[in-house]
Image (cartoon, rainbow, N blue to C red; front, side, top):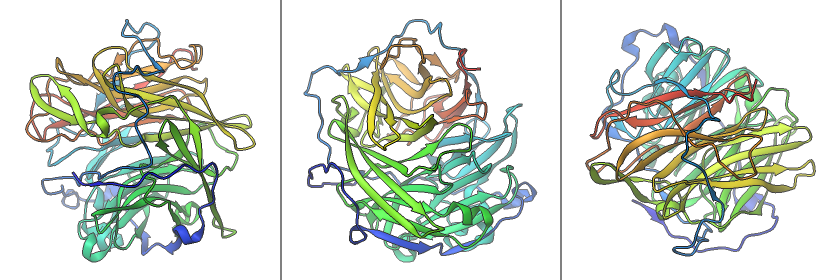
Length: 518
């Protein structure tokens, strides 16, 4: 496991990231168009060769653990009682065992819900499901097949670390993965496809962006209120030494039109990594706001505001602003310690970074955001979550926060979102030395006391019956909670195992809707 050890730098209250510190504006190295994906013959749908997806590299940022050994988590809450206030999840299997030949790990499970479809991408293959019937209508389709007409590395290499998003305002799909197999000699690339219609089985506009000798690790994608697409990376020089956290704005208007497009990027330097871009939820139209980008520091969240106006060629990044939060310590020290039943093999917490997504919604003249990460709580791993308010003046504050950790089981790899009435729903994995890894969700209802998760937890209904053994510690490396067009129904997806083993993961997709959201 490659770790970059960095000096700890003081937090600035407010600063401007100047061009000398990492600003760049570059065109896409390639752009083109795909055919209708549903018309591809079966021979054009290859699977990737067996392999382990490149491990997300660990890094140390300006974070010191804030809770002394043995000290209690100051915002721990939760209940394991029967979740009478929470409805059962309507769930079904996604891509994975038994109907799929697993040839790589981990699945990096993520997905998003659109007008009529749900798209799930499990690293190097994706599938399209009918939203109503839950029937699979396309795939699993190798990710690089989308980029076949583009040529170059995006067409050749199917490398994963994929994200799929639904652009609600423009009714378009945004699919992205990296092409890094030959990055040391050919340059490291990000591949982005934007659908031409609401149909994820139709045609896409295609783009390839290059980052030269910097490996663009762990990309995360958010849709901005300004119509641009924002991507964050952890950069590693030639795939080795940490070279800074970076955030890029992609010209969404040009990409939806299929025109030549540019990206504007800021490298925040080696003091910051594990960034998450905001991703808007709720019904359009939106007030145009600068994009919020977060990571965590010592007992704080660090926030940047990214202004990107491609039409006016006006760009700026301000920050970091430090937002104090309750003291916390990273689960497992950021590494591997999650136990499972029937094996000594432990799972990776990936607790050195915020988890996908930074869910954004607008309420009147204010903006609110929900995000989570994994912390040590009650001597095990718990899900720390925050609801953040951004006032009309741009000031940031914590509306509420908590750690869901009611017992001795480990809970981690979460994803969170909030519906239109203010319910916050968190999906996550749960495991212990006496239970197989399982999928659960919990919720803070709008009427609950601030910071509490008092309603128990509900299984997503996965027929879990195994632990991951051998020497494979990877789990995740992320999950995904997305919000449907009714502004109430959540769609959560992550991995589980139907039997103990290695290279035999399954995935589950569940819909969750609280009774008070109609």
